[in-house]
Image (tube, rainbow, N blue to C red; front, side, top):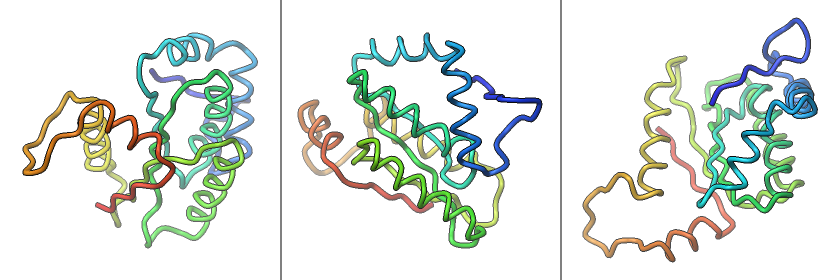
Length: 168
């Protein structure tokens, strides 16, 4: 589902994470996320949250979102898209601040992808993320020479604190 978060006459956060969080809280206090929260609480499996770490809207709003979902005992897996090595240092500082704040609200496990260099077309990385999600939820299968992962193995992997990094 898509909801453009607006806290005043301007859209977006301008890479300001505090503004992104304020925009999120504005909509949360208005009840705009009640249905989303209800769906997440009723989910039978993990809830995947995908955000960019470089800007402010996604990286600012995912922290209060995670906090609320954790307070409601929702099993969440943040998928964070990191800036690449050629991106400005400000993007990397936003990513660093995001990881610190996620740790402060109790997020110990997340998956990290790195944006490909020299592109503003996120089609490839988005496809990669969707493919990962399909594999994790058992809707896409790839042959392997090793034993397959059963549901108990998958839950153990998803609940184990750590990081998975994919660099395209």
